[in-house]
Figure (cartoon, rainbow, N blue to C red):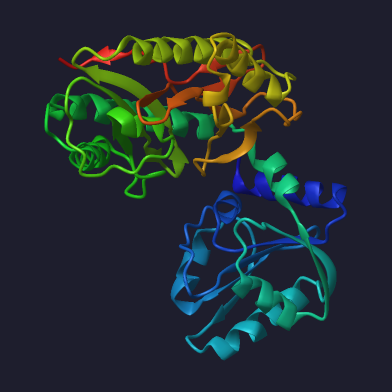
Length: 369
């Protein structure tokens, strides 16, 4: 899908949602619509996309050279280093887009007070509204090029994991394994900006779903959880696998098997038009029937694309139907505080007739000694 087509789809969605425009700051949605990679910083960047007419970009002069890369006409409103010039540039851009009085959508999770203040200073009669639904609908269904980038990111991630596993031995720390995995991700071809810092959790630390690797040394017997990802051409991969060193206690081995069964049950339910919550229910049912329902403390999955967490979210209240082209994680888990936890995560594509697991790698617990 070309950037021109994305812009046309956005404008049609804005009209359908009775919005006059959407205004984006330096976010993945701005990258999706323009192809430009601009970091969120103290210098504001605003992309103004009206339902009719050409977009406008408010940006620092030092970023203006990137505009030549755009495949469509855009009006540029660069500003210098004096913050007093920022509201003037925003006001000029809104006027050029005929938005002095308008219903404007923004992304609440990305927009800062800085950008909100600039919009308020620039226009007296602008009504700001949440536009997550519009942007989720625009970005959720991936085209062939996006899916191909996610596939490459997964291949990079797995190659990096296999290169890292030989260093895992008694007395190495979580931090050291995470550092080695990060190095191997970059060597294998990941974009320098990883989707997230790898999670490496030994023993009881694996019971924390978002554990931060620390100086805990690996002391057998121990369960090991590794949650990691790569980014290729901006698109993310996200995986979790389980490992063991020494003779891990039987209940921890059992919860790993239960989580694997929940992962398989959830992936088996993925198909077009199935509500997102159905996938969550399938995973949760397996874990609940095994007696560990209270220890599955998060949703079953999340969308994957330019962001490592984006719609659709696989949770019990989400009735949004799955559509071909959606890509998301399936990652059930069981966490026993003070003892250990297990999670097995795969990335899944909804196809026209069902689903494809994009991460066809071994899932069973792997013994490292």
